[in-house]
Image (cartoon, rainbow, N blue to C red):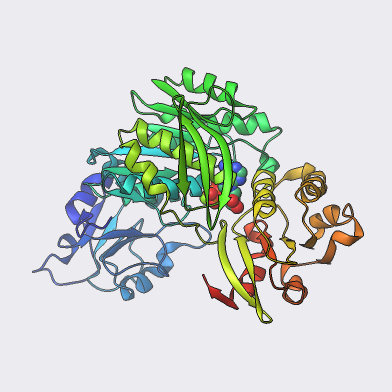
Length: 478
Ligand SMILES: Nc1ncnc2c1ncn2[C@@H]1O[C@H](COP(=O)(O)OP(=O)(O)O)[C@@H](O)[C@H]1O
Ligand SMILES: [Mg+2]
């Protein structure tokens, strides 16, 4: 949603308690007070003309980029000081701390909006579920959701600060690396419905146990608005714990999704169908079949979570279900492309956006379910799963089981951790191992033949997306 006047100078000043000023300028005019911002940006590289630029101190100090921001068309800048090189006359809003200023804008944006908000957390599937919610809620009204993951201490306030006053729905992804991080973010968002997609081994570096992760995800419920609804993954080992924490946090009601008996939004059967899938589901015991545009059983479960949350905030369920047919996979998250190989074609499943054991298992299942053509084979191109802590080698080795069960024909693997998997594979499944993902490109390009399905997956930092990109450069359709 766009709104021409997302923030006027006075609204932004009132929200943050900051001072409107500018360096130099003409005392007879008041440029410092006469701006309004169409958006909020913290990065001059993606800043759009009309945005207010928030100079955060992160890896670099945003104050060093003020000139770039105004060159790029910033309407104003939220700063903690007015640097010497701030362009003459450029409108500034000066606060004590710019991250707090961003949070203050976020809070004010929330307070003036009368729509419904949904918070999404979980070890995997946050962004996917956010995108599903965007699509299903759009069938019901105006939706605001961030274009990117934006789920951390600055991403959540940034996304909320961009919430248009008249949006009917806001969807917020909330992530964490450490215990305690979700609590303040959820308190800022105050969701009317909060989803935990799943709890699994991710970021074990910073946790002693998966239970610790479950506890941290459950923090999302502490921020629920009065009357708020908790949307819970009934199949998960930590479902009882999540439910207990939601109860303690005062959730007014619960809705479950999953494959288990008793799930309110239940998946009975999943079948891939063309580029999408067909689902047999039951909603409050009522069976029905639905066609969806995105494949993957894990995505089907994300869809049920999204439906549960959308209904909880008052959206029309039928409109939401209809919208699922029009979904398209996002880049690097199951996106499919047809690639030209010799005089034939192969299918690329690009899962290179990120990986942990749960999402890796989901992607391997996706590969297993993808139909090959003629003599085609199933190839897995795997980058490392990062941030798994001391269990990382074992978690990589354990993938051998899933790959065998999925009847994957060949595995191409990169990185030292993937060596633990590699050494477990029977020789006929071993394609190539390389120290880094770029080292696989040539071998994978040579290996892909007509009718094959190639699935590329790994943590973002494994750079395995480079392999997907190389293959896509020969795509016929995207
Ligand atoms: N519910 C789920 N369970 C397991 N894996 C999932 C689930 N949803 C998505 N995934 C996989 O996890 C990866 C990351 O998905 P994404 O939606 O970006 O999650 P997040 O935002 O939580 O990192 C993708 O490869 C996707 O296919
Ligand atoms: Mg994400």
